[in-house]
Length: 156
Image (cartoon, rainbow, N blue to C red; front, side, top):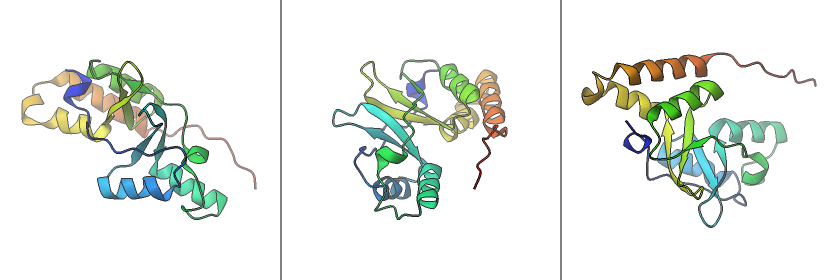
């Protein structure tokens, strides 16, 4: 099974100069927890999660209209290609505790996103019931993602 068989293709994005209210609205309207950050050519520059937005507003003590995407986004992006095997995504999720992976073409242009929800849906669909490998890989990724990460202590 390939990534293109499970990915969400119609993905909303935002730009680095947008205020955080823009991706927050995108998340609300599209019922998602991540928004890829792209330039004018749709090349992926970073990602922004709902947690990123909340933590930025809390820590900075500012509204979402006062904070910008580029100051908040995660610039390190793990991605895959549409023609990669699904195991590439599940391995990325497992090894880096990711719930979502951006899908890009050869030029780095955004073409989709694969979420843990996408994988679970595919693994439990009637056509995939016999696919024990996918079920095992999704279970392993979920177990890894759910583990507590080591966090740095923040002094006040």
